[in-house]
Length: 225
Image (cartoon, rainbow, N blue to C red):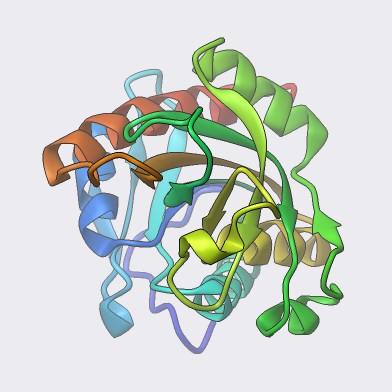
C-alpha cells in the first residue's frame, strides 16, 4: 500500500492529473457517470468511475509543485496506473498565447532546483509519450498549439521569458517521473495568465478545464495508445 495515497475505491489504469483538488472534483463531475471519491488523504482528492463511453478513469489531485506531483505519481504507479494526462495551468510569455487558450506540451525544460532529483540538468528536456501526445493533440484539435514549457519550483513569473513559451510548476516532474516509472504521460495546460492581459477568472479556468479534461479522457480511451 502506498504511504501517501489511501485509496478507498479502485484505481484505474488511466488517470487525469490536476494540481488543484477543486479541479479534480470539477472534472470528476464532468467526466464520470457516478464518481466515487478514491482518496482524501493529505487533501489530495481523487475520484474514480466510468466515463459516458464506459471507460474506467481516475482523476487525481497532485498538490502544488513538482516534488508533490512526483510523489503522487509514484503512488499511482504502485496502484496500477499506466497512462496519465496532466491538465494544469500555466503563465504564457510573449504576445501570441491568450488567457484561456490550451497548450499541448511537446517538451518540458528543466531549470535549477528539483529538476536534478528527476535526473535532469538545467537545459535538458523531458518529452511526453509520443503516441499519447499525438492522440491528445488530435482530440484538442488545431486550436491548441504545441509548445515547450519551463517548469519552475516557484510560481512562474515573466522572468522565465525566453526559455519557453510558458511556465508552470509540475509538467517536468510528471513527464520525467512517468518515464522512470514506465508510465505513458502527456500534458495540456490552460493559459491562466499572459503578458499584457488580465488574469483569467475562475469561470474561464473552469470552462477551459472542462474542454481539456474531455480531450484528455478521449485520448486515454483509445485502446491502441
